[in-house]
Image (cartoon, rainbow over all chains, first blue to last red; front, side):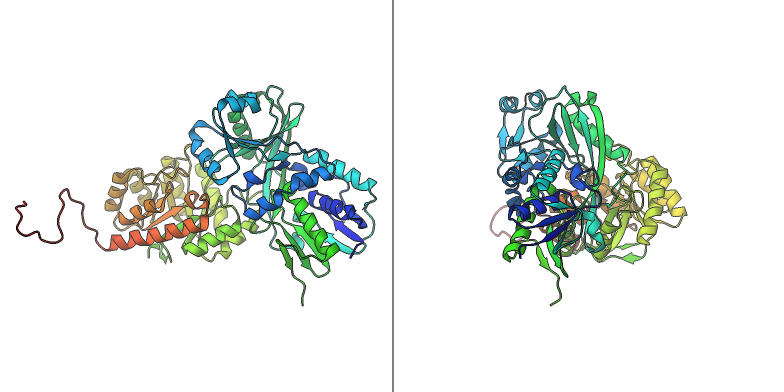
Length: 326
Length: 256
């Protein structure tokens, strides 16, 4: 089959799918009633970390393996990926968490105070020990989605109109009407401006109850994330969550106390029970869903596997389920 | 097996349901350990419109008894309201009552705890209070209607084990007829075995399993330890003594 294809949903999953299929010369239509990328998509609120090794501390090994493909894929589709690695720190009393993390992230190397200063001078004021994951990267989810949307337009991908050919459903949590084992996991995040702190790469602060990551967006702007609460609620950031994120940022570096609060964001991530995505065939429709907290990390692998399936008949090595009646 | 408020449970191991890498691993941990009771928090997950029902459905599917809790509640009113919501959600009078007194250590507020326990018992709840090992506090809790006590081993999530052996021992001696559960602070299966050896009826833990590198294996390890400790308690263990006592008589040597 070489199309045509109609992709329902224009978040990171749908757009990555459209990019992969159209780059292989397939005719693609994307339908999203909300239009261009924006705050209706869960991926709008993402951190944009391409950090398979850090995620591997708690995520399944397959997520690490598939996630390693992400940085190159995004670059080949025009995204600006920063290859600066990830730094992981813990407060003095939580040093045992740093040891556990090091044990479970085999690619992590230890940084001394001097080495921290070489990478992130502002962190060296506060930390004498850190872990460094050199092979990781990050991107800005919003500029990436907007640029990809424009690029697809130029390439002849149709946005809106009638459904034609094979339907690929990438609606995220909205597909719960069919995917009954899909659940929402609420996440809250903040965007702040803090010219007093300079960071060149994502920093993760380990904490037994309030883990935090901070992703620099440039021009003194930072994204702070994210809570992970077992509820499908898509709105309503709570004071407690926001306070915990702020507290953690303040503990990471007190200069964040003077940061300007630009945005409080909230949405729910679509996830299956094992927190791994699926390409699921039900009737005539292909569903690609369940990216959980790994939208930008795993959308490329999911898109490639789906395209291999549809264009070359190649059954995906993982995450594929055929629910058609035989 | 212990009986809580007239219901006999199937295992002395009680597990929390937070912080697992995924619900699938959570379910596997329950399956491999045979844990008899699942505790679940409802305060934060409820959302504006009980949007947490997907997760709660997963908990119900575990097939164990469900003990909803009031984790994250800092006041009597908050805890009582959360308990009422939990009763509706899970159709049970059981409630693990947490009234937190200190945000950082999550130490129980003993005063709020007694007040909330009294209100809930009055309202027909069967209260499992998360308390310290303080004897007087435990007496007050029993006076207001608690028929189970759940003293901590150590502060929540620390994994330090049984911090006050003497206190826990005297609690056991003082309340021979009340089911006692060590709740919180356990880090290793040996901690759980130790609690059982002291005659405790059950243990409740979460972080030690959920945050282990392999939660499913660790859940099983705790199940085995709990079984070993309970067997030992029932086998009337020897008392430790200062002198080496040969189990075979030693002939021909002058030993006193």
